[in-house]
Image 1 (cartoon, rainbow, N blue to C red):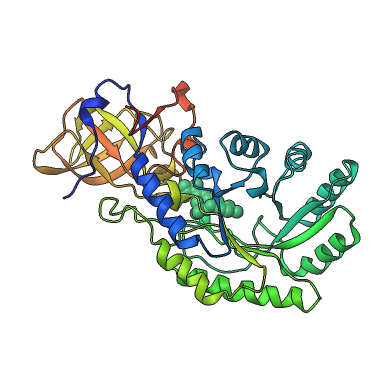
Image 2: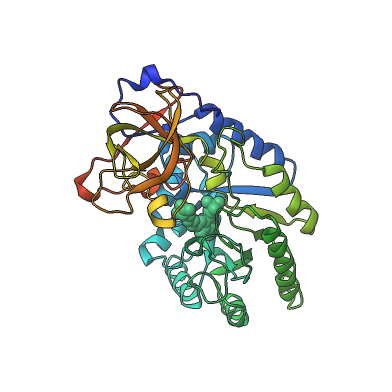
Length: 385
Ligand code: LLP
């Protein structure tokens, strides 16, 4: 079994658990995205929700990408970390007045609007500030992404986005307003999508919606296709970079742009997941009746994905070269769901061994909590330790 490369000698001095980010891999990933998007009218807005660590954000913004934010604080964080406001899209079903103000005051690129009352609220606040605000309508495309139900977002009866029945009213509201400008449409069908045919269906839907707008004399400057490209959690060492080539080619093939139009993407996971690992130490090896437990010092508080979505993360003992055996890898939290993996094949392990839980760069640190009064793990970067 191939294992990841980690500077274990340097890890000795760092208190576990901690997030370890491979900056070279992050940069390689960013170069791969840039290669597929440059010289096309494509703009990737990195979805901050996946990981809003300032160091990571500064790397991403230095490549010229935009940001996709879902809170006022994410907008402020993105700007602090070098994303120009002119490349920030602001999504979310529950934007508060205060957050709308932050977006308007910074003159962000666009609000992705998810309901009719939200349009009224933005109109009202923009009017009080005598500003004109660019909006894109988030439409529920009813495309099934074939992923986990908790991260499926584009089906019809869903808290996200506008249903088609509301579109005429949305368009009327915008055309009546002096403070709203409709620049395009937005979709997001779900996350961790590995069957690219779901994106093909999304293209069909996007073109259908475009015709709907065109037939009413409305041109669309932008089509925002959201995020969702999945990564290979099973084999992080064989496939460390998502298949951006097939992903972007698919859109080039199925979505021919009109003059002056641009395609926008909101990739999160595929940008940052592979470069991050949660590094933890074995606290105890406990012999059960018919199995062995590896109790580590990281818990669901540091990476909630296995507990919340039954998500798989590849796990390696990076200290041991002993023969392989099987363990349930569990954390110290008082919840049975605090399990990183069951029946995991690992080199025979002892107290103190370093364990790497891979592909934790997305929705790991970003979703950490302090349940059980735990300390939030530090983050370490391959070029700084
Ligand atoms: N755009 C919108 C409107 C979104 O809701 C999301 C993710 C993204 C973009 C970024 O999607 P990505 O490229 O990362 O798939 N915590 C879950 C994932 C939740 C995704 C929420 N929305 C997990 O750990 O799997």
